[in-house]
Length: 134
Image 1 (cartoon, rainbow, N blue to C red):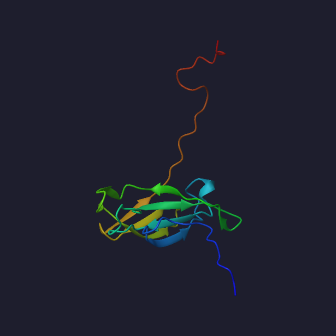
Image 2 (cartoon, helix red, strand yellow; image 1 turned 30 degrees about the vertical axis):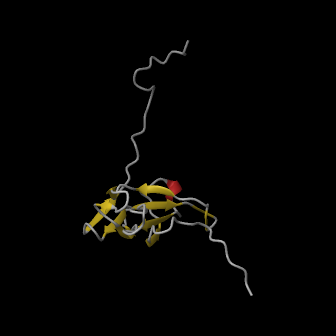
Image 3 (cartoon, one colour; image 1 turned 90 degrees about the horizontal axis):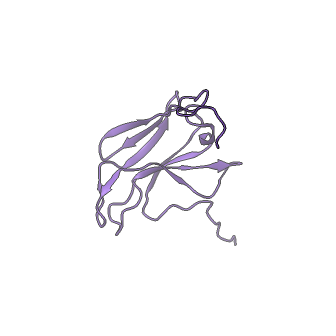
């Protein structure tokens, strides 16, 4: 008889994981490559709503590192005992250019999330004289 296997990562009950996609694109920062994006649709009948977001699960050596972080939140608008939402993430895909697509089965929308690196700063920051601080 085998013993139980402890999960590498747990999601909050009733978050309703509907889709997972591994990111191998080039658009987002390098630390995103190999991570999993997870669509948490959320539960309409939980006493306190949970889910309603996309999270990123970082991986190292082919295993989750043990936590996840919010990537795209805000689908849940309000409502403590019954969620009032403008969307529920249901499916994910990565485009050829590396953007993340999120299908929302409540609002009937496909969201495209893209990344643009901030402009490189050259020279001294604005408002400095270049002199050593006193």
